[in-house]
Image 1 (cartoon, rainbow, N blue to C red):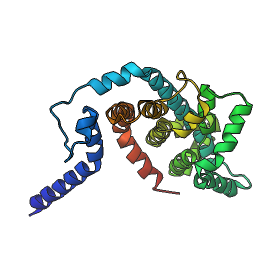
Image 2 (spheres, rainbow, N blue to C red):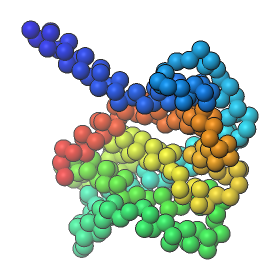
Image 3 (spheres, rainbow, N blue to C red):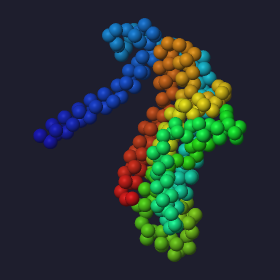
Image 4 (cartoon, one colour):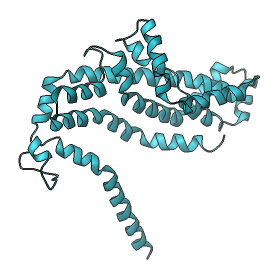
Length: 272
């Protein structure tokens, strides 16, 4: 009876998994088809005329490798910057005692509730005044620190026993040594979770890179895909091929880091 129940649960989970990823599977299949097969009724997953033509066209018509380079570089800058700034801020909110600590942390949390679009104009005007448009610094500057990232690491640091910090202090370990030699190494799962979160957010950015870049040399993959759609009109096979190509790095990173993501989120939820 128990084995039968487990078998039923497995089938249910398998069906739900297929249902969730079906749009992605359908998009991949359509990316190998021409316009006639894409709009064929009833819709089909496979066609006799499937080919690599759409992918060849994507790589020949747009500088997609330049877009990938810019996207990965911008994403890595944001990931590294958020890990550094969030580590220091989270450590201060956890182990320091100062007047207004709770109020300041509340303000950090409040930034998570402010719609991104409400800051867009002020951020853009700031970048323009600093003459940072069409630069990597302009693409990354508003995202070097993040309230959600601080919250994630702070929640994990809250699980570190106070006795460990006190023992380290007695042994002459200062704050910087404790952060880099003890707190940071034991928070690898939370840091990996933060890195994955920051990478996916940075990789999927569209409107900000579109706003602050003017040339192909600085555009990211998401912007390049959008421009391809506009320039090629209604060639949805080409657009789908570009979209499927663009999603590959994010999927790979998520598959590699999903265990750390879950582990980091659970660890941060234990105490706080």
